[in-house]
Image (cartoon, rainbow over all chains, first blue to last red; front, side, top):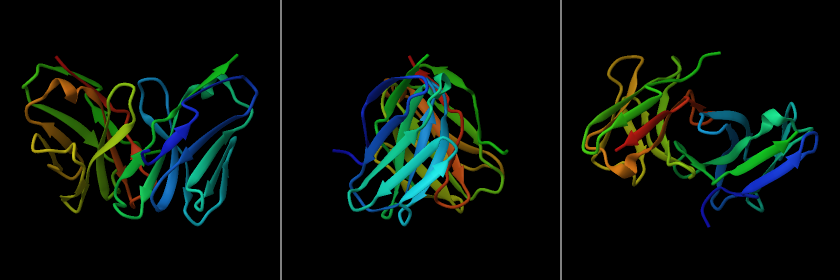
Length: 112
Length: 112
């Protein structure tokens, strides 16, 4: 499989519930980033976690990184309708550190 | 907060025509990038640019593509002879270091 694979591919939950999205990657990384993309729009940087960090918080976002399993998770707590978007993880690899490798993304739908 | 800007937001062109996509990166940033996203697919790296030269490019970035920083503020992507498969959203990005990348809103290129 390719670097930066998210699962699930699509997630639909009720407003107020928590949403968890996962990302796996193959090669060693400098950092892993999560981005949000509203339909047909630009990429919004959410959070960056460095390879020597295990967990990071930003508002309602919580990101974990397990470099031994080469995986990361993004948790959005107390979801809102405005959180409806696609979420992508992107890795900056140690080899080729001037580019981000994106996953396929998780399409998150928050139902009111 | 400074942002990366891109023009035009939507470009329609005939197959075989040349197009130039324009970007104004954040002013104190040193690294500049182009990515593209074919509809429904993941974001793909095209090229990175540092110190007035290409520092890395992907297999997608063939001889039909070129980048230029013609002055101190603009960063352009030229496609010499567009093909149908060049239809995509093109994102410009910039960063002060090789992470924490700021993306622009994108230019949607439609090749007819």
